[in-house]
Image 1: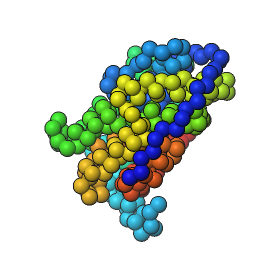
Image 2 (image 1 turned 45 degrees about the vertical axis):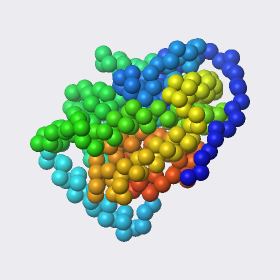
Image 3 (image 1 turned 180 degrees about the vertical axis):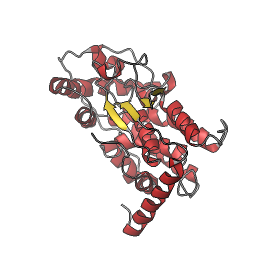
Image 4 (image 1 turned 60 degrees about the horizontal axis):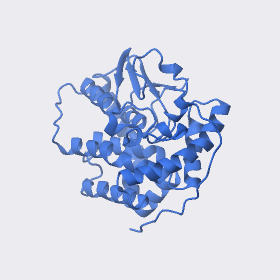
Length: 315
């Protein structure tokens, strides 16, 4: 496996003033998620940094595709009689990996859901809730928070007869996602100025921002997160961020033990968690490098095909 060293980063400055709430919610690492300190957006605790940086921290052959589609239909029908809510609504930030964990679960299980994209400055979309972070999921009016708790809750609604163990393989790797894999995201997507701008272009394009907020967030956010990522490397003892990402990808592939998925013949909750947090970076430079330089690409492609098209309801 080829190891890639970090590119020499150029220090850039910005004179743009940032709204403090925007600073708390923009990054693909510490964006206001529902995670506790060890599992905030990107798995990173809040960092005390000046102004904007303070809170920064989403093809197989035709025969295989057809078989997978048939399998998805059967899977969805099996679930329908067990769990058939009238309305599921996800309040999210598009680039948030924890929000994408929830979406991966919903998409795989073909549960129709609506999306409400939350404005990270005003958060007006979730003013109705006492909980001011994302993801928030409502199921027929019942509020659910914290990505792992949301997934556990949905799983129990779908499979009340199954009791999960805290010591099994699936749980072990779900914790690995929240406590290790997510820590590697920020140092990689913000490792130099060009990648930081690429990341914020994605975040602002897919997020709920006004035109002015989009411009401010892209350039000032990229600047701030470039410097924050360097602090995160030090905090988590990361010497070479790309090598660390590659090592994590290889560790995951080894855990599969030549099985199609960790769950065996079909994905389990750990497969969906890894897929979910990697999905926002997959087509950024860091994600492309990861697929090009590790063995994870084959598994990721299988997951893309098996999870299938989003089950979100487009309005």
